[in-house]
Image 1 (cartoon, rainbow, N blue to C red):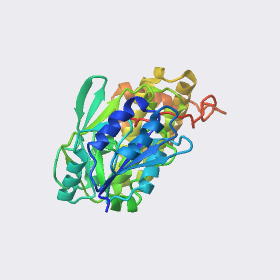
Image 2: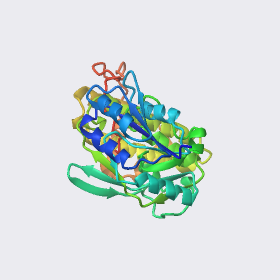
Image 3: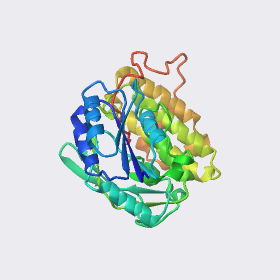
Image 4: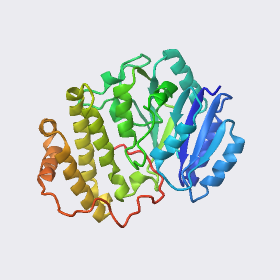
Length: 343
């Protein structure tokens, strides 16, 4: 019987994949499987994965004939997974030896739906621990109870799917799959749904995941139209949260987070291609007009004027008739490694 399935998408990460694969080998166990999803790599990643399938106990290689993106690649792995527990890793990150055995032992001991864990962020030679924004550790909690408050960083602002381990019953309930085709911020609807609908979770201090930031081929480093998928992701968060029985309680948090992310991207719009920066402003203005206006007004009143002011002005902009909804110069299917947006 497979105890743990680890879903690991790869796309054009030849420079880093060897570190990832070595760390999987150092975590291998006879009842673990590693689902290596090659999302149509065009560099030497495919050859590395073919060799890893032969050399790493429990490794299984799955291939996409065309690039489909991180969300869909994770879903491919989930559909093939046989484990009682499931987790994720990105193809340019790595683990400390024995990390997964410790996670499995923790989930066995706490007997909850899922665990969330701290991680180590690696930017060049700099390393820093990033902690789950939940104060109570090694204690079973209600996932819904840590969505709020609206004005502080909470569990739904720590969206990394790989920073945890999940019981198969969540997969069977449809809570672990991602929205197909999302090319950035794919973890955002996922983490919100998980915390709204799962029954129990816990946080453990196991910073054994090393998350590599600033990779040149990561989508977070590329200023094309694919970055704007964060708008689709948060539209989904708003739509699904609006249908929740406690929508009145939860929507202010969802709206505030959406506004904060829009503000972040507007403040960094110089990194976008000019036409994409224009598209960002058009789509963001439309998104603000789609939000529940009473909740938006309260949200902006509670935000600092340095962020709220530009959002109010953007919302008042008159819609541009015939404005494009995508950059025609960019093919959305263009292969690219897709690092989770943390904006």
